[in-house]
Length: 464
Image (cartoon, rainbow, N blue to C red; front, top):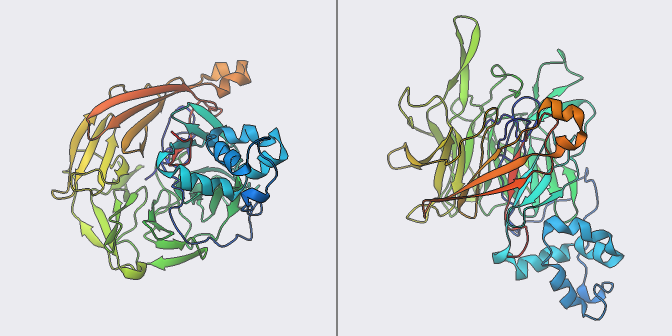
């Protein structure tokens, strides 16, 4: 799904990372500990070595007067957002809090009780550090910036998601100083992975086809990622840019991309998700835009898709051909698909429930009738020059916006104002049909006062 940079200043979108330049992008992703069993191959471009699995009995004393196994269990209750503050306490704590032993303990003793985190990208992640936000404690924790390429800048429209203890930042649109003309955006094929056990970024094998604004989802219980469609459009431009129908599958264990059957037509700005996690798994690609037309022979206008296409993954993850699903709404009902999230086990039969945020209204997708039905209206609308971000967490729909963007005059008066802002989260429970909200001060806001991107880190926070 195309984002406008939320992760951006002045507007807030929720995706895997968002904020800055003109609009903002927001990505939503979940980090699920122990989600796959394959061991990822070490990357030749890793920014640091893998952390050791420290035998608790042989490690230095953690807490004087206590056995190390008891002390390790106590330290495993420390929220991830506070671990960076504790690492400098002593050498033994630094080693333990940077080891795989901690992750193993949290998987064993706290897996069902871990809270969820939100990852926010205030700007291009290679320029500004992302932040983790704990909705329960309202605590913020900075992450290291993504590896920087001195020749590119202005990354946006990328996708972020998590598999196991890793966060992936894939593709996007950017400007390259080596290209001509220099102000023409280019799609990116790069993929970066953040390892929460080492607090470091790795550069992985690039995609076969560069792309931004594309559909992306992790294949359930397989250690693989699928990407489909996309293009080169940048948030600084409301139209133009390339489109592609390419589809690829990434094997996390082998660090390798494989081409699959392409989409029926070129499609960018689309949303992707999986339905089913057993032998029958379907990859859905919804909405997006294809070819453009001109208005009055001058202004380019996108032709937005009203349908969806579906690929069923066979045994061995081999894909079959795509099947087309008819139009999901009538002409004139809406212009384009809104922001999409999927709640696992959210429908009455235990299957996934698909929700869309279209302006100030949430819709639920009915697969039987292939129609969007109104679910609820957001209690508080987004202020002027702001936008919502949409993410699912613990079966609840989180609608996020930046209430108090920073005015340009305030930015000039004080650097402190560039780090101020109010994050307002409205939370809807689909089964109870109720709303609640939380409000907190945002630790970092981009230089233009907006959020570029935010993502979800599930079951990696503090024990409840």
